Length: 532
Image (cartoon, rainbow, N blue to C red):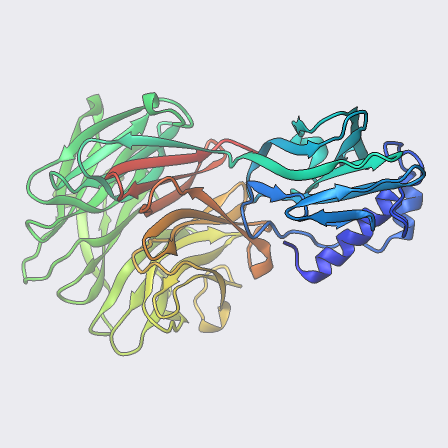
């Protein structure tokens, strides 16, 4: 429900718009057009009202009203509308399921013989009530999203009795569609580790790891949205040993390319599709000194050349590899560097992005002092962005409103956090601020930050009970998301007990889309929000 301030303003608005009186009457015709200029001049400014419902409600008891007349009386879980011969009784219910389309509202009402009830939906397009009746029973209402919901997603349902009618409102049944199309992309064996989603050839594509045969796999859609299982085709790219973990997908010179770990050989590998749809895999860095390289790989194209950041778990170093050609199809194309070895363990959970035309990386320093670090490659400074209570896991770096921003998970508190720079390059500690978005409470929940329709958004797996994880979506109503009040949260997939692992978010056909792992059935899944 809204906070007390928002609720108070909405209550005033409801009372003014309905013309409610102390005796419970509704003077005049409630369906008439209002004199909006005169009404607005009498009211204070509208509340901010960006908040969404804290609970996704599917059934509302009749007594659980937002506002009511004095002669609307509780009857157990129901509500009696006790109108008199010369008085009217009414009640209002407030609905706002987060990030969901309301497809139907069934109002269950018992109406005595020869009596009637009227139902109404808030009509924000006209600034009045959309009245239906007189009715001799309840009815299923089908709202129009554009007309009946406010810009903040609020919808109000009213029931009205007059002339001595005394109906009983039992409940409201709310049917919603959260707008996400969910697809099982690959169901063969236990698949879907280390997913990485990108737009390739104009449609979504996913690189991922198969737990069953320890191989690198690639799924691509034949359509721009990939919203149907029939859209997807799957191939195995590399099965030479235990390969494919920590995959990162990007389009390089118009073709899909993937960085990943070869665990069997303690190596970093890179695969790219070439002419004739033939994939070529090369070893970028081998373990010649006993280190285990290729963990947490992140691939991006910087100034026309592919670049990969990765972690050396034995050496505790952040490394990067840069190709000297635009495709990186030969082992000789790659040059290897140490990015950060200031501590005994630095570089885990790294994420690469292009910031003002140069490479930048976020990562975790986990030995001497826990810290979230950031480095813009054209500056020697290694910035401590935040000091978490635990580990700064699963960092995800993106350019938001022209400046670097990072989503990450704080294992010490269980919180999903969002850090952002006030400068274009973010090369000073003073540039960075951090806010808390949600209690994710899932130590194995990668976060994925992307810009969707010009606004930041994050997908992550959220623990909802001791034995349940769900895929969540957080999105900002502003271009930078600097204020916690800018953000809303919603469930994307709660269809199984353990879902949402290895989430990777990107914009597909102008819409948010995410690839992820469902551990309950061992499937690679993909969701795209097609609704408004």
